[in-house]
Every structure is written in structure tokens, then in C-alpha cells.
Image 1 (cartoon, rainbow, N blue to C red):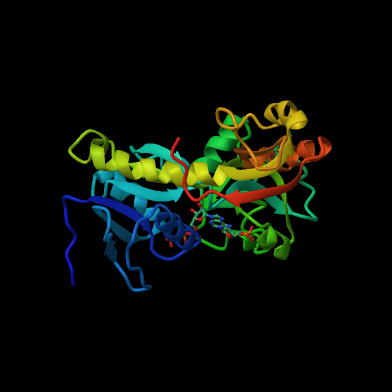
Image 2 (spheres, rainbow, N blue to C red):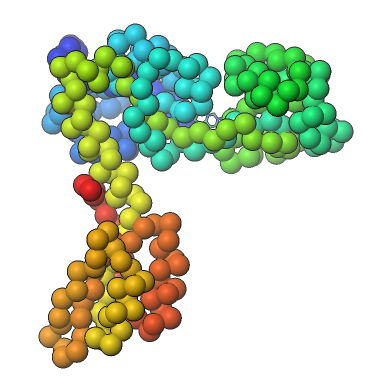
Length: 291
Ligand code: PRT
């Protein structure tokens, strides 16, 4: 078996769980080439000095804080709960979920104030205590490592604080959300010394790649043919990153307009373009974008 090269950057990711597939997909989109199979402990990248270590999600903060690895990818929720001494570098825009307070649907508790002196079960005791302290509501927090959603039915708690993404686990257990504690997504964290020592340059190269993938996700490349008279309006609707590329077509008085538009204003922009009678719009995904 190959050994880890200690001169390389070391990145810890979840071995098996909700973040694993999307993390591997994100790393590959960043142009990193490596083998990954279910029993792996680590992979060496073929085209970048990076070792990927596969570990338990909950262990990642310690590995990064202690310098066992330089980087880690984990949920923001784990950072909020464990508060490790690490530097957060990037939000990675996947693994979205929220930490919420939920109660049984038939419960008389309809707002968080009614939870005063009640028992809350959670795998996030620190986040829970902080939330109720911040709201000046004294509660008893019971720490549970899994299946928190069944504790109200078992009589262990009157409410839970747990992560939710689709909401189907809550629905299956006849629970409803009272309020949100915080939102979470996958994040990239770094050991504080790794940002200063000899690996700083490598780390910057890697984060530039990651940012390229993230920026590309937020934009679409758009092309259309428009008559000259409409051009000024088009430039107002789609100013682009700086300004759109406009080139004359063989057909007299017609131009090809190409630009990038933001994903979150995509449909709004298309509707405005249709209002000025632009047709034949072609939209392409962007693989990477270095701004
Ligand atoms: O074993 P290991 O230590 O590696 O990890 P784990 O078992 O603690 O983690 P895992 O795989 O369950 O979650 C890893 C990370 O995924 C979390 O830290 C979050 O950042 C993120 N994530 C995103 C979620 C969810 N969505 C999620 N829905 N983590 C857990 N859940 C659970 C939740 O606790 C509840 O039991 O899924 C259930 C609710 O899901 P829905 O879809 O029914 O609402």
C-alpha cells in the first residue's frame, strides 16, 4: 500500500455519509484526479500534491485543529457545535440543512417561550443551550447521539433540536418545526498554521480551483442574436460581468450577444429579454470560472 506523502496538503473528508458523494463530486469538478473506493483510508491525487483522508465527520474538527491534516470539509453545524480553533475558508454550497426546534404536532407547545423548564433532546447540546440562553428560556437539555426524533414519543423529551433537510423524518414522527436555530452547509476549514507555513502556496492554488467551481455554479453563459435597434436595451438588461461581448453577424443589422448571467436572476433576465422580443436564446453551463 502506498504511504501518505507528508509534504503534500492533507484534506480530511467524510468517509461514509451524507456529505461523501457531493464532496467527491466537488473535488473531481475542481480537476483533482484520484481513486476512491468504499474501503479506502486515503487517496493520493495524481495531478495535485494532495492526500485525501477518509474519516468520521465528527472527527474532522480535531484532525484539522491539531494539524493532523491541513484542511477539512464538514458541515457548518459541526463547526457551530464544536467551535474548534480552525479557520473557515469557504462555503461549498451543498449539504444544505437547518438545525431546528420541533415538537409533536398534537403538543400544546406552539412557541419557544412555552418550552420554559421543559426537556429538549438533541445531538447538538451546545448549540441548543446557546439558543435557549440567548432567548432567556431556561430548559433542560438531554444529549442523545442518534434517533433524536423518537424521544418525544418515548416520553424522554417534550421537544427536540435536530437537523432537517427534506423534513420527511419530522413528518414520519408527527413532529412540526417551531423555529430555526441556524442554517448549515458544507464548508472548507483549514489548520491555522497551514495558512502560514510552507504549504500556504499550495493551499492558495487549491482554494483558487475550488472558487472557480463555486463561481461557475452561480453563473450561466448566454448567447443570442438581436437586431441593432434592440442592442441598447439588451446592454441594460444584461450588463454581464463587465459588459457583454457584441459581434456583428453576416446578416446586415444583426448582432450576436454573449455574456454570463447570475443563476439567481436567470429567469428574471430571460423574461426581460423576451419582453424586448429577443428569441433564439442559447444557455450553456459554465464548467469553471476564474474571476
Ligand atoms: O458517522 P459520521 O461521524 O461520519 O457522520 P454522521 O453520521 O454524524 O453524519 P451524517 O452523514 O448523518 O451527516 C453529515 C453531515 O451532513 C451533517 O453534519 C450535516 O452537515 C449534513 N446534513 C445535511 C445532515 C442532514 N442534511 C440531515 N438531514 N445531517 C443529518 N441529517 C439527519 C438529521 O439529523 C435527521 O435525522 O437526517 C434526518 C432528517 O433528514 P430529512 O431529510 O428527513 O429532513
